[in-house]
Length: 500
Image (cartoon, rainbow, N blue to C red; front, top):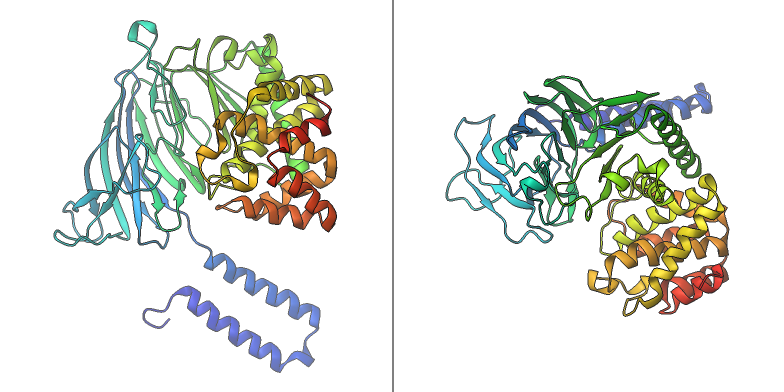
């Protein structure tokens, strides 16, 4: 091995040499054997050349009764980026950043206030190699140590927060909930030039929580203990749920903090398996990892706040009473709540495999997840449940005005009302498109997008995938003109579906 020569470079040299030998001895070898041999060595090179995901190793100390999280992480295997920031939840107080391979001294760092999509939830940091050098520096291994303290809200006597949301680091007295898509409780790398986030990480993390009975890290199995080390070589969003609650498992599917009876738990497992199988068959892409479902109480007034989100392969349901998971089987909201669960599972395809790269990318992520949930409802829960949900969407849009068609969405203001556009308008249009091109072609269109695993999905990406699926030029122009470009797309969808 020559000095400064990478394994990838050596591999290239060896491949070139082998191919030369094959060329010289072509007449002595069978073509089929040559093909197999070349495929093998080239696939090996591809595996070597693939970009590694960020690796996070360290310790986390939690107290669910005090609302504290103390983290000491070492980050390595950084992506090749220069114009970076490290996003960390704004409730975390930085102790230091260190280049542990060079010195034990703390690095100088700054907060980047120009991070284009920075929210109040996070601060964006970057470090300097030495004082007086303003250039961004990313060492081979970066240690970051910090401590956060958050309000613990058990009930109304504690004083509800004004709201609860996915990116909240939420302590409700018996558990803590935190994820990586919005809250960034762990360091998340962001490339400012390409606008690419790196929330999925490989990890080796030791969690200690003296007032917890169960520890859970997304991508691993829950552990009934107050201390455990979680390891994953497969990249995952590093979401956590730790505290004192019950667990149930069947065939690799986990249910945490269930408020169900044992009979309903069994019904739930059956339903989860059927939903997973349905999507896997239609998309020809099975879920990776064991599905986990978390039920937890919000830290805002539960009569006003309930929501769910997907952190592949885990679904979090934040709600209680009629919005808890037990409502899947014994409330008037049963059909709606089952659809919500199907929506979150659909985010494995649109939200995990395919991620937005523009404002319109949110139409792909949320609109197609909602369409898939409606399609699943129709196939597995029945036509009546589907019709009820579809009519509810169309009736809600009765006074929806001043929004832009798909082709003209550039900013959030173009939605007029983000919730109505993404969860009502978009899936209604996709349902009408299905009726025009057929269910088979519709699933093929979705598969084409999901199989690309595009992390910068936008309007052109969706249109190109549609054209690759629907190859009839006249039908292409009809659908694109009628539903993508027209200001009358909703009226066209209502006419096609026969619902007004």
